[in-house]
Length: 155
Image 1 (tube, one colour):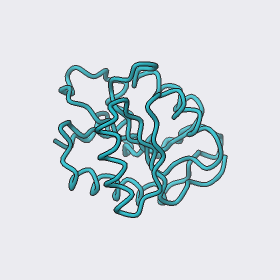
Image 2: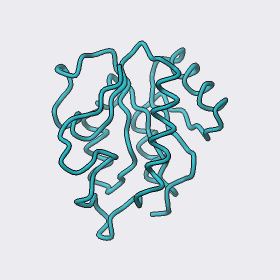
Image 3: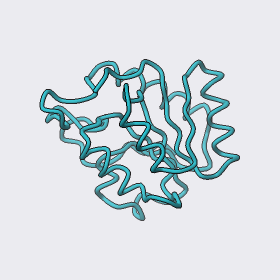
């Protein structure tokens, strides 16, 4: 797999208004943004070529659950940081997903989102996209530091 794409962010959101606002905001901040209304298409894009620096993922998608999306990326060995966007409380989200992602609550605060994306993209350049064995390494998975067992919640 290729090195992490420098400032590419994939947004996976089936609400067109949210997708438009988030993508416009991040483009204005200088990010290279890919947008997807279907999780399976985003998953395929993340597998091809250079992995994105960060993935913004809506928790409730029609074609694939966030759980399945996270599991599939992990199985493929892609360590791209995932930020889950949701209006749900963390107690309603599976523990498996919470261990693998960062979390930002809806309605989205755009300044916080930009800050979270900026920091996540910076972290993506601190660690390789794959471990030497082609699977997540012991140093951390998906931007969650070793020893951390819950998502970072940004509300």
